[in-house]
Image 1 (tube, one colour):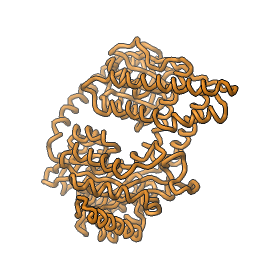
Image 2 (cartoon, helix red, strand yellow):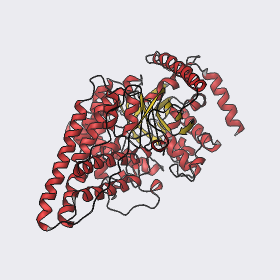
Image 3 (cartoon, one colour):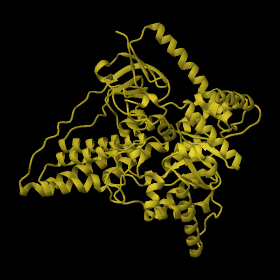
Image 4 (tube, one colour):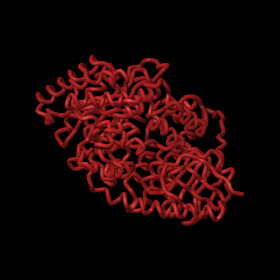
Length: 563
């Protein structure tokens, strides 16, 4: 029987092969109380399971091929760090001692607490990290129960893996075994496994919900990672159609690869900057691989996550300098801390000890939190300024709402500069300070902000959310999320116009910048810098190189006049 399944394509490519379905072994986690005499032996059992888990992850890391992307090692290291964190190591041990519960239950409870924290986060990328917590905890629990993990043998290079979910470690081992692709019931586009699949060039679809129930081993599958489609037992005519599409895609990828070192210049000579969004220093490999002209958005909050205390100035400084050294003089835009009510530092508590905000997207976050907590903010300002002595750095302020906030930030920057000068510490005194335009009121009053800033970067994800009054992660209303809404386009156009009038560059670092459907329109509106996931750069560059700026501008003006 032929049928189709639709999911989320997280790694592009078309593959035709046979299914290999990994059986699911549900974890049945026992709960029981311990007599006093068994408490310390139970803690020792937990520590042995943690040590065993660590050895398993190290073995996976050792199995990574030498030619694998740097991301591959990073994701295994991320699980190792999570395993070594006190949240996974000390808190379950404390629960065993204080509540006399067994180790499996103590790990499960701690896992559930951490998952709940991640579930409350608004940022889709950060929320997806719940999967890593679950994967690490599950591996520990399986070792406590004496069960093997999901990774098994028996498949070959022609197989497409069908699983309920995969860990980064599973993905690495399967890539080593040269599987053709994988599809899963669960997962999201920003999970580590999804990112790893893209880095490894392994076509993948996640979020199919019931693939493991409907697909049988040895079924013939067509996996279209671009469309997020799985075709099960298709007829020969459909197979021939997708084989032709696969060949066409290969040809296109070869053509795009040739653009890597060419400028993003329109047919009438207008050049725009194409930059990359990164989260971690390890992401720099992708910046280079796809020929980005620098980093347009470095999300620094990841230095603060999954730990009990914020990073110190020195740790931040070293992370920023690592990026600068790796990029060899290419510009880097460092966004200051975007933590807050939607992204907690530890244990779900607010850094100032306050209660949770009912509506976190509109609460104490980003620059609002940084101004409330100068002891949290000043070390980052010092670290960014110190890093500016090692390469071209721009500092970007997220979630600006009014001019008073901006003046407070600029006063703090001035104060830190004076402090560093007094200490004889090198920094770039001319380091540009820009602002993210995410709040509609700022977009409407962009001319006022442009007088005090060195650049704008439009954060379309939040700008669209706030302009349309919808929570983009709420399944009941996210159908209203529309980058082409007339109100949104006017906000974007007004921001670009205000920047041009003030003589400051205007870029965009939201998802819209990396979506080729909007490239010509944004070019016509006068956008000077597009920053996106590195893998999106070749396609956007191709569109720009095939476009006339004059024609795109004329089209954009006609469109705005009609809205």
